[in-house]
Length: 114
Length: 112
Image (cartoon, rainbow over all chains, first blue to last red; front, top):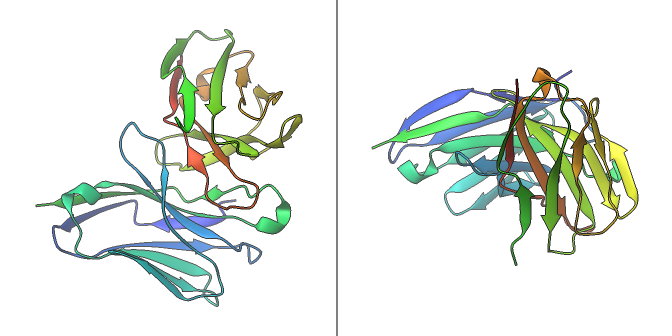
């Protein structure tokens, strides 16, 4: 059972455009929702994260929108640049379990073309 | 401060062989994790540890073993390698009171 569903699988955006990646979760106990960025041959790195007590968080060109009632959250990349080309993973975790283990979506490969 | 380091970077194993993937972190993190990443499948948790001497199973533990004798090291053992264990393996760590997990560069393992 996949607890975090991510779409689209791949995304091509022109330079300067907006990239949008969506995720949906099933477990209402999740209380931490990070996005990780991964470049080829590297490990994932935390990009931005949100908790369910806020509906939006912005860091530079990156924004998370969170809809608790719909159990959905999304990543928006404004003014997308070729350097943003990477694979993006959404994830979720439940702090009450004590392990803080992350459940990941399957990933979105973003290509920003000049 | 090297962060999370993993060795080897690449390895080819024959079916039935065994090996240990090494993971070391120098950030004094309490929690450590092993994930595997298969194409188009995201990352799945194999094992985790909340401190030295304490380990527990994740989502896909079969065929693997771990130990945590020190805060710094969290090796992953494959006893009888199978083609299904062909994957990229990532180690990660974090502080007890912080959410962010820091990932190593990964080990690409092929079992033939």
